[in-house]
Length: 186
Length: 192
Image (tube, rainbow over the protein chains, first blue to last red):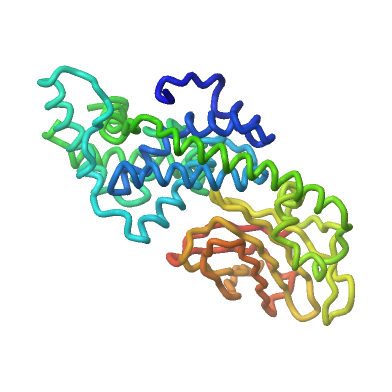
């Protein structure tokens, strides 16, 4: 059962082995990056299946261009996110998206709190996603790279080809924008 | 609500747990990895054989060689001439000057050289991974700040090889930029 499969080592280590031609390591790379890439893709694509397709295509492209990876501040996950963004953009243009982020259902695979808490949680998540949808593309990107990928300002700056100071300011502006949009609702 | 609390709520709202792993998708990853490993082995053997002499010879095989050469060319500092030449109407053996590209988006592979012609400057740009269908323009910026558009291209699924020329002389050029349709700089190189 893959859901219970234990992957030994982190993404960086797995990728180093993978680019050396280790097939098992490529499987580990896929399993390790999948949660993050899936979240990115799912925010912009209509279905879980399409988001899964985007993750698979991203890893397929990574396999084809692994020799050209150059380590940077954002690491392997940053490189993969960059590929993923292109893949999602292409799928989006091809008409894959039929929903907005506010319509993304709360996680059907996350069996968390009690039903009454779950209702409150879903309302909060929906409010957050609705606010997120109203942000500009850049605001969305700087926030999701931080909260989903966990990248610091320097890594986000590298990914977006900007200075770290500019990214910190952009994150602060985006956060204030969200705060304004959700005011009184959370 | 402070910033940390808001970030936490954003994470809760935006992060999605993927469905259970589909073994068929894993099998596809493994199959692709096996194919890539086999292809790289034979590619290395083919690339190591012939010597690199000139861009004229290089061009037909450039995309294949780039995979191997990118690591070398990519780290050459801006303005440093490399031992690659090309024949041209200016005469034989014009030196190609490899230039370092800054700000190359993650997921994009790009390398570039310029040629100092008697009539101006030529840019040789190899790039892949840019958004398919998106328009890009190449701009030279002179040391006096003048911006000279020298052509453009559209992102494609295959590696793109561009040549852009301008009467702006190499000695007068300060920067080469690739900009997107909004004018935002996608990647650039400061010429020294």
